[in-house]
Length: 265
Image 1 (spheres, one colour):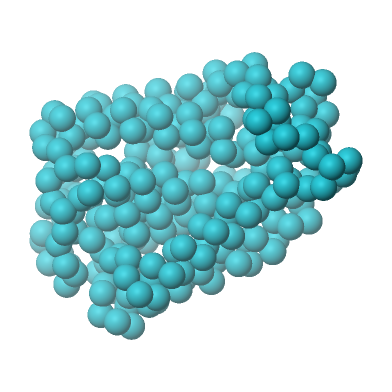
Image 2 (image 1 turned 90 degrees about the vertical axis):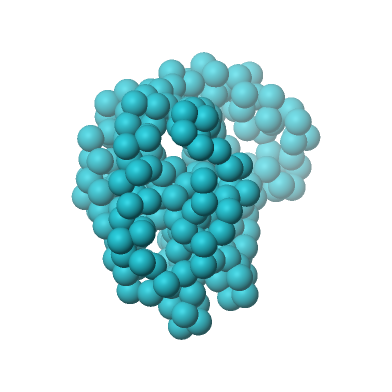
């Protein structure tokens, strides 16, 4: 099935997305590369505001670069705002309830129907909107925005499919991405606390050794919670994915977005 690419990744927008992803990777991964013997006795509370300040202008740059170049129009921005609001409102149903977060289905469907650039921005803005609604603003927010942006981006990278095959593909991706999102998000706090010798981060140790400890930590502390998110995404996409895909594609056709149409890859 073809996708309406509302945020084409080209020129300045592609550069902005590459930069914001690089900033996010550095924000997540820098503790793994500190000098041997270093002690990490603080959290990301110090660098999170700087990460947040870096992410928001770069997200705006992705959209503005396409607006100024004619790659997207006001209707595309309105669609982004509407889906972000819907996803943010749905996110209010999830916190504190076994990890159930139906908003991830909206992010995945948006990336699938409207392209990977749109999916990235939608993922980030949905988590931002949801945090404002729920009051969940804290040092974890910029990391959540980045991780959700990647969920939407890779949803837009899924291979072509139609009918039940497409719905099954999205449901499977929803399950896997729900787990991976949790795995990635744990890294924002895991290196900064002590959980015991078998599951704690050790500054300066080989990357493989720390990843092994993290794997044990994840399996024993976070897996069950993330299974709630993964299962919720799978069920929403499996049961309602076909109808929601038709609705979004119908909206795209009626809006007659002035953007190129490309095949999903």
